[in-house]
Image (cartoon, rainbow, N blue to C red; front, side, top):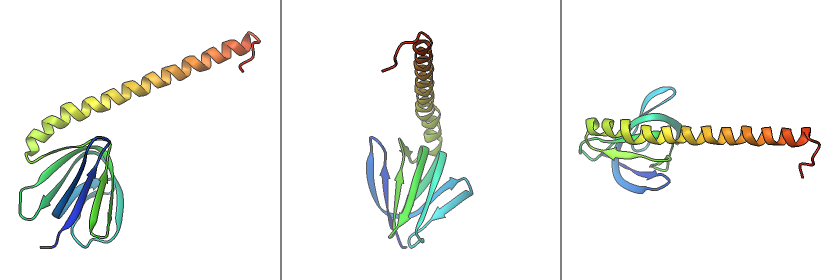
Amino acid sequence: MSAFDLQLQSTTQNEHIKNVTSFIAEDDSGSFGVMAGHIRFMTTLPFGIARYRCDNEDWIYLALPGAVIYFNDNALTLNTRHYVSHRDYAELSNLLQTQLLNEEKNLKIIKHSLHHMEEEMLKRMWEIRRAGESLF
């Protein structure tokens, strides 16, 4: 059976997997599969689970907080902030609910803090301007 290479890249991880025979994921248009020899292809994956198989082995599942994938020259590159891989879907689901959801929660807290800082800065600039002081 024909195979292709899979490059998994995140901010802290980098794996090169050879002899991948099938990759299955879902984007905004629905589920899709990639096999060796696929035409050049690029899409984004939402928060969720993708899977791949090497030779005739069991599926390996990937929990992702979103990703960009690109298939070209018989190689699939997956770029994401973070991923967790596991051969047991049920175990990965548990990891997904804890680790990745906590990461998303922390990102929302950071975004909220940045928004609050921006509001306070704009408020301070407005007070300075109202008092007639120079901003610079």
